[in-house]
Length: 178
Image (cartoon, rainbow, N blue to C red; front, side, top):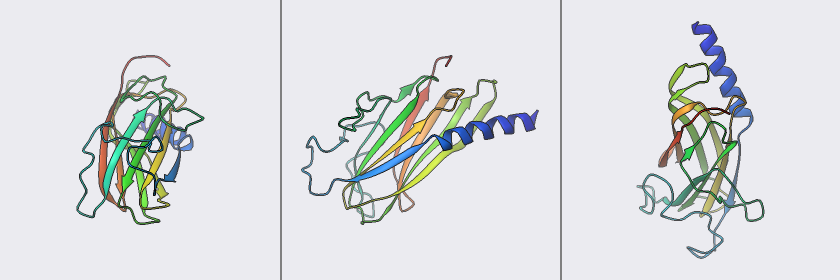
């Protein structure tokens, strides 16, 4: 039974990892609060606005289930999803970066239940590194649902810069069916 659980989990992880994407955009030189900035200090979860000990400042983190193709901005902000949500989008706007700094977006299943009824806790679903093109950058991450849909439960998105945790957002997947 344990082998079946591990194989099921491995399949879910492989599908999620193979269907995630990311990008990062520089925002240096754009006025604070302009329409060009995809995140605001009032965005989802965690603390924003206060610089870290290394001088990094999270301007905002937006999380949602829709992105406008023309503007490339998250259009439906939420931290509550269903198993049938096709993609979870995350945009993290950060100031005080060094050009070329490594920004890491990680999705962790805190406590979820698979469609087979198995409980999985504290499992890293996917982690992606991107390089900051400038001192003010927005890293965009897309986490695509596995074929069986998102397992129901709680998740966490963490944003790190050069290994330093700068922001955390809690997500929930509730409901049933894909």
